[in-house]
Length: 194
Image 1 (cartoon, rainbow, N blue to C red):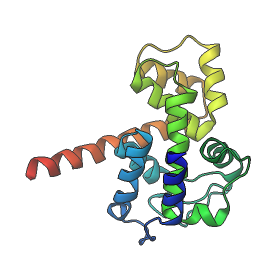
Image 2 (spheres, rainbow, N blue to C red):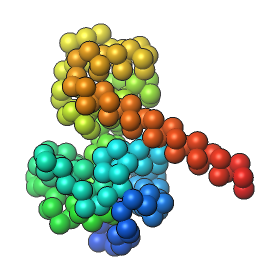
Image 3 (cartoon, one colour):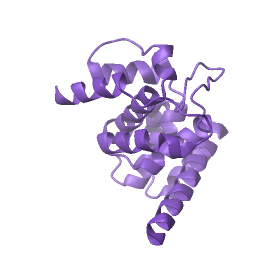
C-alpha cells in the first residue's frame, strides 16, 4: 500500500519537463527511480539515451512514447498491472510526461531484472537479459534462453544475442551498456574532483 501511494505521488507531482537533449535535467527523476526500483541510475540513463536521446517528445514508428520509449499496450500495460493491479495501459498523455515516463519505464526494467529473469544468478548476465527483453520482448528472450544452454558469462550471453536475436537487439544492449559505462566514468570523475 505504501509503495502505491509513493507511485501515485510520483505520477501526480513529477518534476516539470526540461528541454530535450539535456540529461542532467532528468538526473533527479532518474536517481529517485533508481532508489525506488533498486537499479543503477547509470543503466536508466543509458536506456533513456539510447531510446530517445533525452527527448521527452520522442515517439517511435511502433508507438513507443517518451524518454524511455514505453509502448503503452505492452510494457506499459504490464507495468500498470504490476504497480496498480489494474489491467489498463497508461495514456499517451501520461507517457509524454518525463516523470511518469521514467517511473513507468524504470518499473518495467526493474520488473524484468528482479522478477522476470530472477533465475539468472549472475547480475551482469541478468541485466543483459533485462535490456534485451526491454528491446525485443521478455518472452522472446526467455524462449531463447530455454532453447539454448544458459550462458555462463556476459560474453556467452552477448554471443547468444548476436546469433539468435535481431541485430537491433544485440546493438541495443551494447549501446546501453556503453553509455552506462561512460556515465559511470563521468560520475566517478566528478567524485574524485570533489
